[in-house]
Amino acid sequence: MKKIYMAGVGGMLGEAFYKQFKGDYELKCSDIDVNEEWLSFLDFRDEQNYRKEVLEYNPDFLFHIGAHTDLEYCELHEEDAYETNTKSVEYAVSIANDLNIPLLYISTAGIFDGKKDAYDEADQPNPLGNYARSKYLGEVYVQKYSKDFIICRAGWMMGAGINKDKKFIQKIIQQISDGEKVLHIVNDKLGTPTYTQDFASNVKLLIEKKQRGLFNMVCGGYTGRLEVAHELVQLLGLEESLKIKEVTSEFFAEEYFAKRPECERLLNKRLDDLSLNIMRDWRIALKEYLVDYYPSIIK
Image (cartoon, helix red, strand yellow):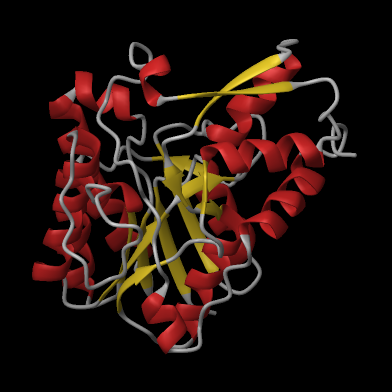
């Protein structure tokens, strides 16, 4: 059985990677936040310990998953964003190269400036803020210096449920749980939801098919925050009791002050070209997510 070292898997995406890979691979999983029995402590910003841990395990693959993904935090803590999202990636590249094993790096749709309707792998990124820059610098470093790599770009993440999902879906569900009757949803942000389970499953397929390089990896369908919110409310059976009020991003300018692209839609062109795109339509994925992780509230 092949071995994978997964670094930074204590969050929503890490939960999916563990679930999708645990039956077919031997795993060693670490994070700075040890919130599962299958996790051990590692701060991958500590190059010496990161190297020691991975070399001792001697895996067949190194998955570098973790990152600071809170855009406002990254704007306020530029140095920490760089250390976590870029510098640690340089360590991962060096470690994987020394072991002559493939490296998996997770990037984001947020590295584009949002001026196009959609982006494929051939489009040139133009990051707008500290988070996007730190992730894009990681991409550039991996492509330039890694001997053997897979880079997968995710869109608007959803997954792992109430304890780990810090993104849009859970934020809306939390507002509903708190008794809100009016949801203020922006009408000027376009993107593509990405279910963590689908994402991890598609990465697994790439590994099995021995594919390498850069891949956009998002669920199917073009959408925006407003449509996603309407779909969520409908799935919860709350259309009659909840009102969705359209607002622009200016409404949240004080709370969400980091620059965000207007459009983060990705096209899975390379996956499609290789007939390896198993990412489902975002509506199907959203419904499954609610059924599996929020069974008490889904209608």
